[in-house]
Length: 452
Image (cartoon, rainbow, N blue to C red; front, side):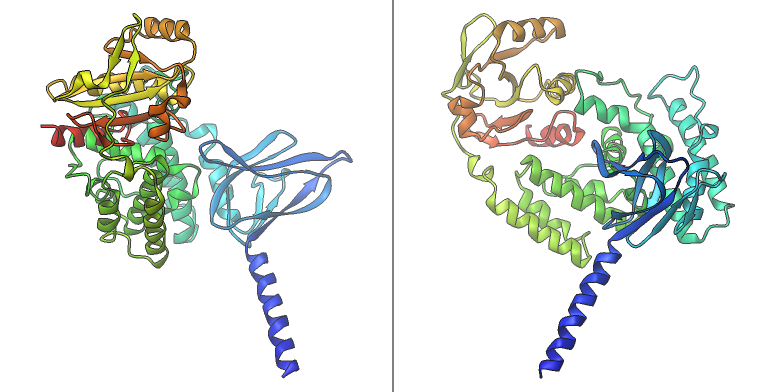
């Protein structure tokens, strides 16, 4: 019996070691000269995520934890070797700077082709073209098509070609939409661009590959592609219950469709966009079929059950009031009879500033709806707030809450971060405790249908 237990014990140890090895990739090479240099590997997500930073000299073999296929950047001695290195659990990546093809080992064919495809040779010719116009988009698409031609004649295996093509698709999405996305995240540095209605027309029937998700933060730029179709009416938003499925249905790949939907639901949970979320989770089962995906849906349902936001619906906020720029107190009860869209923001908050332009556009679009727009700044400095409003030519109902998050309304509504958008019903009660943002065209479609 003891012998059996010993066999089982050592079997478990061997299995654990094998699993650990499977999650590691080995990066190796040689540094000429006697001085150590810095080897840096990072992944570009919302911000760069550093995966390795170590000094190496002579022959080196470094272990990198890799839990899933991904594209990373690799630099030596502050010089970028490649921004598009494909690594997987268990891979062995060899770096040799003395050769034209710098990469050997696992995925050498993929990585060397990626270096060539993302060289200066494949720069889009956008000279003289208006940004965010259809002509500009077609110039970007032309470079993508040139890359695909090289991929198809490369001699790589079909599954390897899909990886490289996925990276090219991610780059196309990034070139098309990253500045639009940045305008929503970094509003003080990037103004909201004017995008022509037909900007995305050449990509409407695109067959996106799941492999594009290997490359960086794919979700935000991919969602902008979907948002473009919502704005032009290519995607029709049915209701709060269906809108995520409505967008996901535009994705041809079943695997990518599920991946998008799961990430979109995750973001909603994190941002507190939980009005009717239980219904969206239920209908998501029509698309989410994988075992892991179903487990994620259950996890989101558990998080929804613990969320503070559903209990806020119906809370009466009508008695709260705040001073305007003249010092006169304006009460939320002054808007009874209308829905009230409340924007909680501050002048120092980048995404808050970004939403100002989008909120103006949405207000103009919904001008005929029974909806009042109220901005409440959480700035502590009244002069800075007034100067900012003057600079941005902000009009409408502008109020100030110098107590910021210590104010009873903010505590009642668990305002831990901004921007935060709250919608009240015509009786002054909370109708949506944490609304989607004005920069999200889905919000406009929903309000257009719901506030008739």
